[in-house]
Image (cartoon, rainbow, N blue to C red; front, top):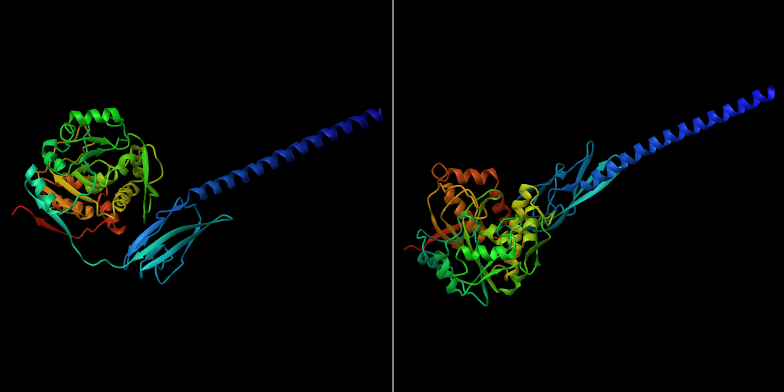
Length: 420
């Protein structure tokens, strides 16, 4: 009898120990899981952190606010400059360009038991002299007027010349009339160049794109080359904040000089489209278009931050200019007619509400686009109101500001009429 009681007691004791061990195991596993989840969360949060700028070019006297994106809660931030004499930084991340030179701004972020250091390279350049870029203008929107502003540039084409024109999205976009540009294109013995789109439509594939160019009358006046029909090539981006490289059509390398002939108008994403957009998005391959739109984070689709997209256009345009003998082998012409708030990439654009203005040309794409924007703003309270609204709603002027900051050109210009 006692033996049975002893055996039952031992069996109950063993069962209790097993339950206790299981309970300890469950609690330990729960604690480990909580720790692992917290560690994963902290690690993933840390991996998403970045500065709003990785590279900045500032003229002496200018400032740039640095911010940490995806900053964890309760994190502490401290800032330090490698060269305070060149670019000191405040406790709140405000960098001030003090004198010409280079510096690295380090941002130390402490969150939980973790630390992470983010860096931004700063290039401080001397103040540019108040030199005005020449912008030639005519109010005569005709083949004769177009030739007049081009000849005023006194630009000598060398080798094989590409003429970058938008062939226009069907069925009724406001692309430039081939009859308007025919004399100019043929006078430089130019080849009309384009790249495929990244948003679908009739120009997303080479065969369809060639057909559109034919339907719209461009193949009647010159040869047409879809430059990314055989793939991509890359151009280096110097001094960029977002882009590490610029993907352009592989056939870009076949040309010695570029004449960028743009229809100035509004744009659903960029606010406006002119020389900078036509040089960046227009010369970019389909892959490159996505890369620019995403601010250098993806080579497919159109996702990305708006300001990063605007600044990336400037950086891509500068890469093109730099590759063409630092801008010596490229010039720009903007035709200000059919001034819709929508781009030539829109097959169903809004009807133009602003009267035609004229044709402008320059060797400086920043000055050229700024002059066109200013002419629109002169009608801010008149028929240019809708176009001004479109530009401001997309923060479109940031493209010009960033382009000047990275050295693509100057927003300071002088208009020289060729009408007399």
